[in-house]
Length: 562
Image (spheres, rainbow, N blue to C red):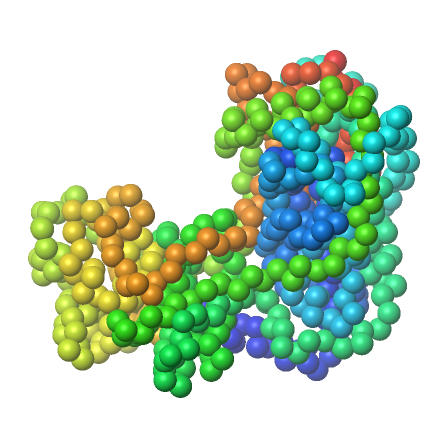
């Protein structure tokens, strides 16, 4: 049997290792493309997850949680998928965000489970100006008669060498980075406009490394927290089950899924306290998810509700933002650049980076039937009778169900006794009568997987995914207990390179280049192309990261565009 998602075994061995040794203590640092934004901007993020015991990257947790706080509390969140202690993503600033300073912090669930955990170990301060309204963070803005002085430049650390040249014409320029050290380095690179609005005083990655290494001994841990070794652990609770007899739900299974090719389907049993814990390998992107409880009667009107994974940690005091009237023209340019970028938001501005995916269903076991290649039938069951031998309809326990044949050890095929997992655009259809009554003219293709699949602790003999032309489950009527919820997944890792932006793009970008996941071997160099904007000015080129031993590396230069 193929166990594509046997997560219990996958994280059991590392968990036993944790129990037999000193508890892993994780801390997360974020670098950003800049520190000064306007409301509506996208904050580009690069994440480092450190093991405080070794001072090196932690390969354990696979999800980092990001919170943005004002003086009054949490205002925005994001999730970053981690792989080997590194990750990338972004946080979208709402256009309604009031002008003021904000604290940006990140953590893993394992790290935050430590007693006395200080979320400020890797905190950053960001300044946000709202160019659409006069709303300000209450008590968080101070009008000043003169522009504050810019903070002192951060001295370079480590062996990373950066050459940006002294000036560049409009069009493009090239930036060269060299690792002069004896260890590999992993770093982020940002090229951003220096328009005279000073960035808030913040922590450097070297400060973060020193703080992590100086942490006092751990006092204890919340043992109820399960480490996210494979990906985000999504939790939900049953709502509306107060009138059900005791024990009604404890033998039932819950499903969470998202439209697609079936890569986001998870199932777990319901605990005695009415909660469900879905062990995932990270779901990417903000999307809708379907929540369903299997086997409920029509009069059992209860449903699942997602539990937020964000801890809303204390962010400490947020310094007031100095506001100077002389910045009006700079802020006007920043606001214009943000609006143009939103209007021209296209694939030409971004470069997708490799994401750690976990495909549940093996395409090598897939047989695809494109229905337009066959005679169209008005009844779904006719498809299986006429030209899909891998599937059949059988009445089991008084209801009709679909079966998929499986190979035995001799290479012969047989139909097992149980029902297959049936999906419509990647969403489980637990009542097979609904798919048998579905209009086959809406279906583009049928993907059949002829093997046993284990989702959590639930086994399915074969899978059939009915793919519609629209991919949005058109005309499917689900039971009343099915809930469709908005879900915030991990942000897709992307580099903001803009190298393919066309000449028709009115280019007033404030961040010219951002790459969150660059690596250089000892002695290696790389030369990157940076597309310059339509306006002149001075730009900062900033690189920061860690060596293989966990030593901070950083470099900074200036670039003039004429």
